[in-house]
Image 1 (tube, rainbow, N blue to C red):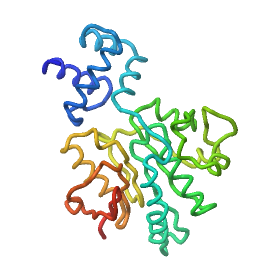
Image 2: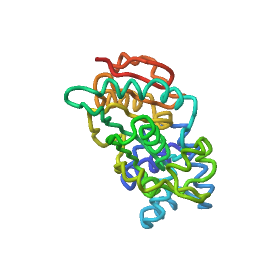
Image 3: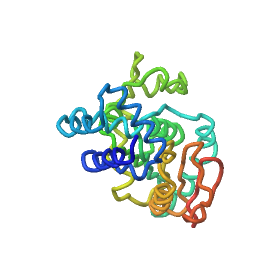
Image 4: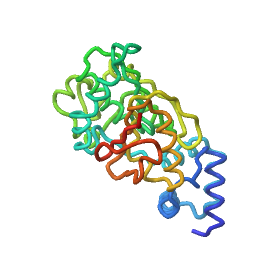
Length: 267
């Protein structure tokens, strides 16, 4: 792909989709773009950009492809087992204060995709603190992915393979595949459209999950997000990343590592 062509694609993505490709790894994004044009069977990027400008449905398809939605319940199960054994108990204990005697948690799933991870977290919260009401926020830039998350599905066999029989009986509607989350669980989560690279962050979170999202960004974009995530956490709050997403100097962002994938904001 010629440099001037890539510049035109980046301009179109920014102006038409509100996606800043400057923040994504260059070589990786170019490969994805080449693959997309081949799949669309369109001769040139100028022709495709013209299509995206005039066709709202194609704009949403292109947006969905660029935002890379791959997810599953309890993805990377060993990290979730560690979270269940150690992190959630610690979070609940430190959340219990005179101002918050119930220990209700503020939790944000950033880049939630189709909702599998926020629902995974909601299940663990239900199991650990039955009847407790927590604030659960899930955000993503992809409207189609958010729509699926809000609807509680559909989810394929491959996306629920780490779900236990007891969890399927308790939290999923009968039948499947495809599988759907019960409304009683889905209604406990607030879903919002949000651009991690452009929109402001809420604050005071006990836990932020942002898993397998940051790996696609440039080093500069990653550092900006680490700093904003730290600011969005309360002291002692936890950032839960994907297993390949490592902050080499967490102290630069006011955090410390407390195990693979987990970073605690310093007091």
